[in-house]
Length: 452
Image (cartoon, rainbow, N blue to C red; front, top):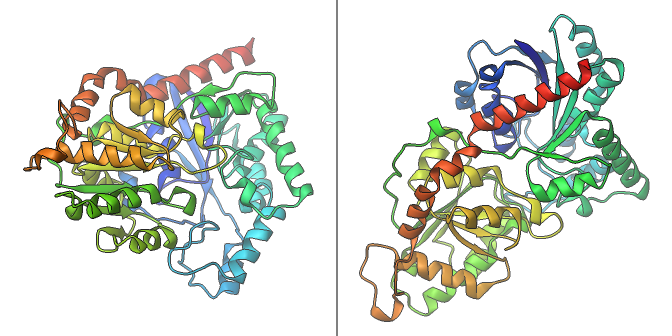
């Protein structure tokens, strides 16, 4: 059995989407001849806590932890926030950002490069350097963001002749919010230089979509491997659950650039045109939702139909996902959106519930939805298309609908549920076990190259 050391900031009890990729793949590595040792902070600043995720950790998983100090405690003191409060530079759940949050963002962008976990790079590198031999490490994997994890890999790889994979779950300087940071020219240059070094010096660089792979490949004369996110087959029943009627659900964080204002406008117009079912539709948003989202819905008279719910454990979210009548997935508007495939999209598809995707119609996520006939795709500005999508979805409901609001043919949610089922075997290439197989094949290839 060969051993790979994974350096990751996120591990249970940390919750949210950032932990899912490696938590879910790790338990399958031994099936393909690799033991995965996880190196992670002992006391990370956890934006979300989800104790239920411990059930996904492989029994006997080797875990090495090292203390970390992060500057968020100083931010909370300045801002007068409670110790357990969540910090996000781009999501304001209850009030407008104040001076303290703006100051924190300024410092984060220009002093802590590439991110506040930069302060852990030195201590973590020294600890791992002294333990790699006792761990019998054959390879290193770093996953970001936070991209400071890659700097640890770069330090270790320069001292040890081990293959190193840099895994980019999101872009670095190509991330949608990078251009919105109050960043100086010098800081921007440092970010870009570090990003270029990581991509060039890693034995292999991996990302989650074809578009992002093409962007990363511009930083070096090499191809970038695509190993996407996915789903666990064991999380989903073989037959789709019975849906809660007329319930649209969204799972995950929602920054202002993901605000589905076009959906609110479309639903409001259908209500004005007296569509028989439109007033009964409810939208439930689970997670950290920016205050502007609910505000924009309320302005259109949807305040009682659009509800913000607290974050719920992953297992509960998956259960609710399978009972949703329609699943909403929204892509950030702006730079880098074409390559974004939210990790939740794969789980939405696996739930066999129809999807309404708002984002670039030629983006990687839209291509995936169309490939598996999984629902509707519309741009954030295409009001007519979103209205038509809602009408088709509502026409598929088992309710009496006036003749002038019906659509001929096989339409609505039922058509798309059948579409997903038709492509189920092909969709299994996104199962976490298959993705782990792909990763282990890459590790085998890199190790053979190193030995030769």
